[in-house]
Amino acid sequence: MKKILISALYLLILFCITEFVFVPTYLFYEFWWLDIPMHILGGFGVAMFASSIFSYFGVKISYKKIFWSLMIAAISWELWEYLIGQSEYYDWVGRLDSVKDVINGIIGASIGYHFIKK
Image (cartoon, rainbow, N blue to C red; front, side):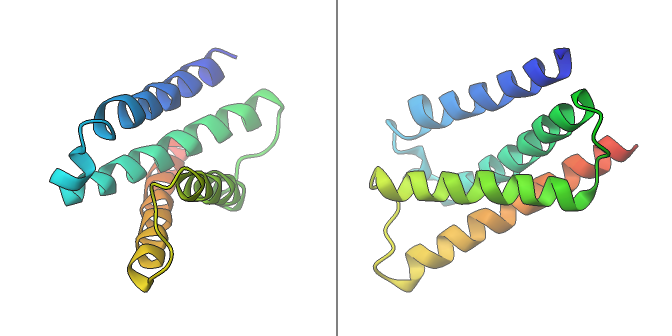
């Protein structure tokens, strides 16, 4: 249970930094690359959170389960960004940015999975 709380707290802190520091100060627009490490860290956090929940319930952890947990979280995040007007999908650049964000999340989840398996 402690691992679940720690990984949930990690994700909450990451979310708060993003929404209450980076967005209001327009840092994502000032530093185009800042979006990349944030999505990688988010993917890492989702992998840790999912593995903690799986471990708590005695479910065997596999890359496939971590991957699908990340996909649910990443697609939900991109949909939320669209709904609040933070992302624009009327051109190919906006759609490509979302694909890039999901790929960065997959990279973070893959790193997290390798940490879990060690």
